[in-house]
Length: 186
Picture 1 (cartoon, helix red, strand yellow):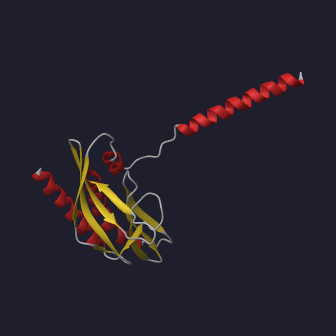
Picture 2 (cartoon, rainbow, N blue to C red):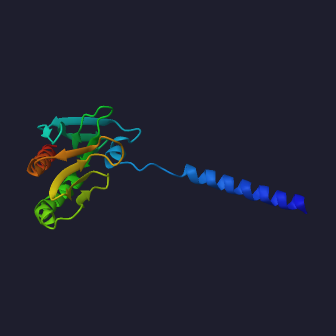
Picture 3 (tube, helix red, strand yellow):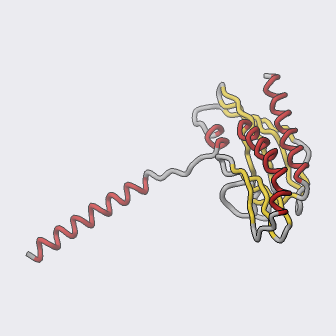
């Protein structure tokens, strides 16, 4: 009787172990729009950059550019913000349709900041997040607002603090205009 119980227990553990290992194989790291578009195998992919004015932030200067990607017969445009870090260069790659949404969100966030400061919260955060994990927003603490952008969903040194939100609004609109100019040329 003891042998039968041990055999059944061993079979149950083996089955559970096999099923657990198969579940791990199915996990896939989600790709950003840029990674999905630019990493197609069997296709010639061309990257063309157009630099914009550098973006002055609270503690550093970040680079800004438009990246046009031709992959086979398809073309896509991204607005990129690059922060030079000590160990890496976090980069936000904001696809054109997401850029339009970020601009709309910024127009909504800008007038709300003064109201939020007047409410004197201990802490308040108001932000917009794209599908790829780019964030723009502000937090209010001690009756002071601090604007920020988080360039990548994961990693360190990927947050940029902003002194003047109008400069950010301006660079986003400049990027939108440059992309639209490039789209019209084809």
